[in-house]
Length: 200
Image (cartoon, rainbow, N blue to C red; front, side):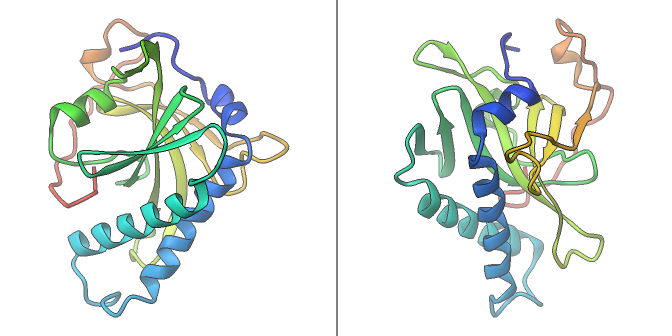
């Protein structure tokens, strides 16, 4: 794991008004899905794929000409680079701990292990996503996480929480995997397995 990763408070300061924009992109994407002709009958895999496409479309529209923000595609995945300091990906969350699931690739594992650098400098990998309610009819939470292997270093709800007052609903999770043994964070949780598209 990289040292020098952004804390939740540093992330709040870095994102500023971008946090509200990220929330609105996910919200608008889901509202578009509600109007999709297959809303009531689509499989979870189809739903995740379509919602992901809507999210990336909204993000590209919102951030295409924003100073300090770069949009890049890698392996079919949109990444938002903020001030060459943070890299954001978009996912569907699973469960109240806001984990993600997906196929175990080198790129995914490197991202979750916070092993990335940009121009030789440490960057913090972040995930913005949505957690559906029990009936899976709408998002119960839209949040940001700082992943670490099988868990998260921290989570932030994006529902208007990172605006002018810079206050956020922060949940500290101190349970990552044995791969993070050099840190003060530990995990005994098994990684959930789900091969659904865009449901890492």
